[in-house]
Amino acid sequence: MPGNQFNTIDDIHIGAENSIRLSLAALFLALDTALDKAVIQNDPHAQDSPGQLRILIYMCRCAYAHNVLAQSWETRGNYARQLSIKLPGISLELDLSRFNGTHFEINQIGGYSQLFRIKDTSRTCLPLTNRFYRRAPQGIYSARG
Image 1 (cartoon, helix red, strand yellow):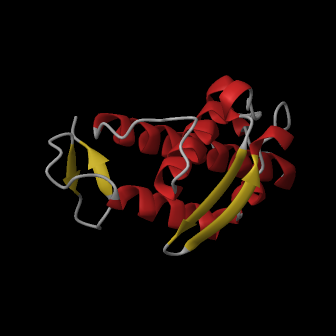
Image 2 (image 1 turned 30 degrees about the vertical axis):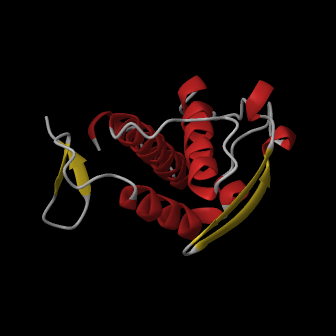
């Protein structure tokens, strides 16, 4: 590597962990933006599962927005609440009030496999006619530049 930035196995691990963190931040930001563009409102009072999934995505985005490499939950006010999300492939019970001020960990939302189900389920909420999004060749939705 240029500049001898990765001299030890620990350097490589830290670099890999930071790459994962940056990828997760980008994913949560993209999901949140896509749902906003599709006019799927973030309602902290939502009682239905799709609405609560929207809350979870927003709260995860916020955790990364405060510090992308040292994420922490900010679940205050109307967001300090119980979520009960029951959707095809997703069964998730979370008490967001317990997380406020704590470090965000992917296992708190069910791990990486649950994250992929969250991403896929969120994507189904987006209208295919939304001009902001197009179908990429590998089946991934991406924003037009």
